[in-house]
Length: 268
Image 1 (tube, rainbow, N blue to C red):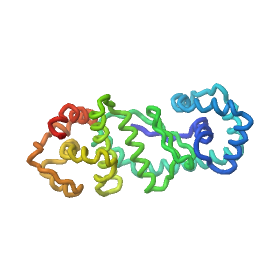
Image 2 (cartoon, rainbow, N blue to C red):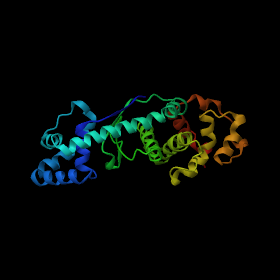
Image 3 (cartoon, rainbow, N blue to C red):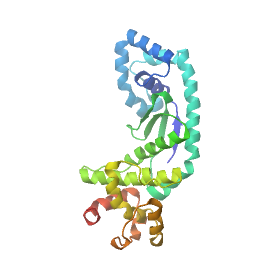
Image 4 (cartoon, one colour):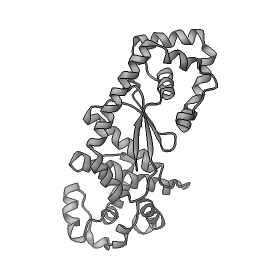
């Protein structure tokens, strides 16, 4: 999986227009545009999905607001700030790239499409994963905060690259396993400490029931299960869970499907 951090100026302008204000000068400019071009402003709202899907090929039906922004001196200053911010994000991503690569290779084990991450103003305070293979990010890039968003980014990637179930019970099972993968396993590696109490409280009990099978899936050997249980402070009776070596051969989607098919046998 390749991740490309990039700036798309149409996307940048759109998120400035419709998200939190960047600074007072930009805010005043937006208010001025609203008063003069109210209808165009309203109509521009529909451009978001097309911008993210079409990328460099996007041509707006009406480009007046975009062009006015492109010519604005305050916007040009902000564009330079966003480029510096893009470099900051890229450095943080690269800092954790070995752990992320190992996560997809050893835990996910499923081919994931390349992703484009559009960088917008950090003041937007947004992470938008609503368009396939595309993420929009404008967040605090400080290391501790960035890890939280790194988890959200990879949650979104795994969610959109695994089959969604119509049955509510099966879908909850899928969400629990993805949380085990990202918010627990991946997070533990990023933070260098066990994170098996993190994630949604609504999924916690289900994840505890899945935990023995999860350890088999990620390849914890039978003689190391007790050590791992101690690390995560989660206790279960080894005698109730026959060790299944075949789980280690699955990818995450196959493991989810296995759990869905066998849920009556081990989720009570």
